Image (cartoon, rainbow, N blue to C red):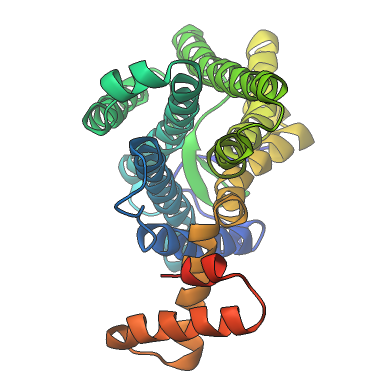
Length: 340
């Protein structure tokens, strides 16, 4: 099954639905999630660790939103031009940007897992060494490193190709020569490093907290409960979903490298693993609102303002009314005032 063609070649069908509706749905979901996350910054009394997690979640949500937005833009451009527009130059540009965002998101998840690992294993070292300023520097350096990592296809080592199935340009995951095989091997090794680091950090945090519960045996349930229910649950869910969505693709690429599979021989496993890869940014917004009540409340208020036509100037009054109604419905005073 031939899934890719040279950019600019004529297509019998100007527009294929295929997975385009999924891209649109994922883009809308990520937009709402990004707005909800940005509108729910940590309180002034929040710990430094929580602020760092919020920063990383904001970057991850922004990266996913832009990446999915590119996935939506490419089929629309193909539809307008009845085929890819701009030739190999624009195809390489879109594929290059998309590859950077996908791998940068992977490193953000790894950094998020490492943050929780260091905060759990060595909290004093985390407070003194792992500052918010250093996290921002790490994010910038990882973005620059990822940008440099995907420059070889722009120089002829590897290539970005146009996939007819989803009508988008992406890195070719099948080797066409020795140099392509070497570059794809580095991409696979890069992915495996991210996955194994994320699994190691996440599992270590889970086992450490489980051992801590046995030691304290409920004597300080609030500290353990807060760590587990808010931060650990969020990072754990993001980490495991990332591994589930990306590990099959890495295995498939490694197998194709070993067999030297050509593009014409790509089958159902290619479609399934790529669908899992694109399902990752679709799943993350649901994890944000499911594991973090503050994000969930922000999203509720966002929709309620749209439904009830509340102006931005009336936001505070609306929140107060919302909290009062919640208290009247039988919630505790603490739960009701948490909307503030």
